[in-house]
Length: 195
Ligand SMILES: Nc1nc2c(ncn2[C@@H]2O[C@H](COP(=O)(O)OP(=O)(O)O)[C@@H](O)[C@H]2O)c(=O)[nH]1
Ligand SMILES: [Mg+2]
Image 1 (cartoon, helix red, strand yellow):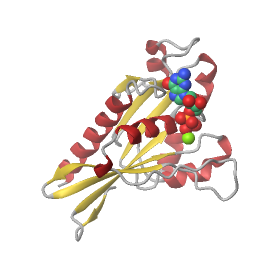
Image 2 (cartoon, protein in one colour; image 1 turned 90 degrees about the vertical axis):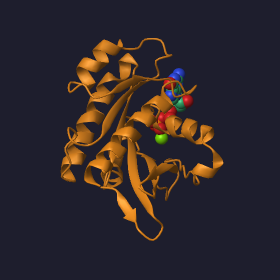
Image 3 (cartoon, protein in one colour; image 1 turned 60 degrees about the horizontal axis):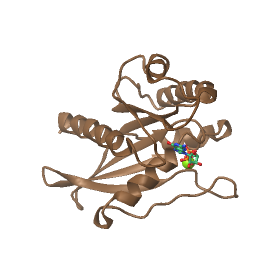
Image 4 (tube, helix red, strand yellow; image 1 turned 180 degrees about the horizontal axis):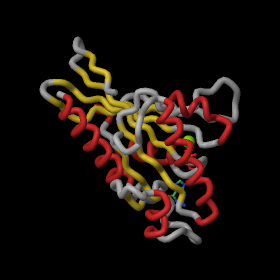
C-alpha cells in the first residue's frame, strides 16, 4: 500500500526485512546504506534494543528513479527478531509494499527460520495481507559460515512457492543488492499495474 504525496510528486514504498534474530537484517541495511550515493539516501536510524525507550526498526529512505514524473522513495525497515517483540513486528508490517525474508543458513538456526516465517505469515494475515500476493523475495544469508544448510534444503523448507531467492553474505555485501533490486522491481511492477 504505497503512499502517494501529490504535492511533492513522490511515491513512498515500504520494504520490510523480516527474519529471526541475528540473521543479518541490519547488516543488509548497513551495506545498502554504505554503498548508496549520498544524494539518494536519507538518514539511517538504527537503535539497539538493549536500552530502554528504543524504536525497534532501522529506517532507510532511498530514492530510486521516477515513475511518470513521480519520484519513488523506498523506505527500508527491519524488524526485531526476538520472540517478545511481536507487537513491534506487527506494527512495522503495516502498509508494507514488499518483503525480504532473510534466513540464517546455519544448521542450528533452522528452527528459528521456520518460526519467524510462520510468525511473518500470521502477522501479515492480521493486516489482511497474503504472502502469495505481496512482492516477496527470500535471502539465504551467512553462506560464508561453516555448518550451513544446503540451498536446496533451505528452498524446500522456506520457499515452497518458489519465489525469487538469493544466496548472500551480508557481512561482505555479497547478494545484498541483488536481493534489494529484485524486491524493488517487484514493487514497481505492482505499482505500474495499479497506475
Ligand atoms: N559470517 C557472517 N556473519 C554475518 C553475516 N550477516 C550478518 N552477520 C553477523 O551476524 C550478526 C547479526 O547480524 P545483524 O545484521 O545485526 O542481524 P539482525 O538481528 O538480523 O539485524 C552480526 O555480528 C553480523 O556481523 C554473514 O553473511 N556472514
Ligand atoms: Mg537488527
